[in-house]
Image (cartoon, rainbow, N blue to C red; front, top):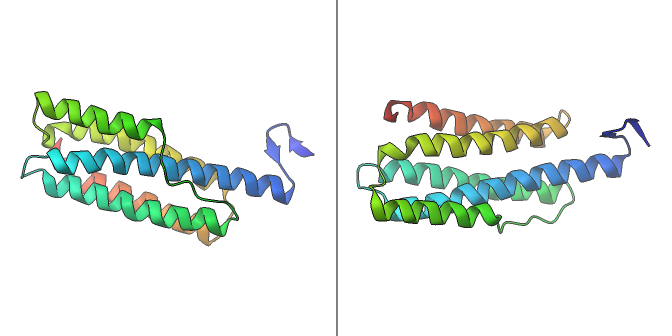
Amino acid sequence: MTDRDDAPTSPDAVQDVQINAVQSLLRRTVDAREGFDVMVEKAEPEFRPVALKFRETHHQHAERTAAIVTALGGEPDSEGSFFGTVNRTVVSVRAMFDEIDEDVMDSVRDGEKHVLESFDEAIATLGTNRHRDEILAMRGEIEALLDETRHLD
């Protein structure tokens, strides 16, 4: 039974929505990390530290997000999705024809926008609790990293 047609009210239904939203965030984070794995490998020396920082941030976020899925009662799936494969392929193909340097920042920002959207979706499902606080903190870390690299536009 729901108050609205799209809002679950039973504790189990709410928990399932939360787990699914955080799991989606985990998949999106792993996908982003996979793209940065290739980017780090192919990056020009002056851009490599930026790619490393993004990759390590996503690596840490994947671990923290998986822990939240577990804490909520779910089984974390840290495999990523088809988009992780796409991310790796796009970066690899681009590296064949172009340098992986600060010129990729527009693409990085577009990708991070999707990650931030997944953060927002997960945040929206969580009440006021430590899991929401943790996800808000991780979202803030991505925003700070984007601000820190703003000069590369």
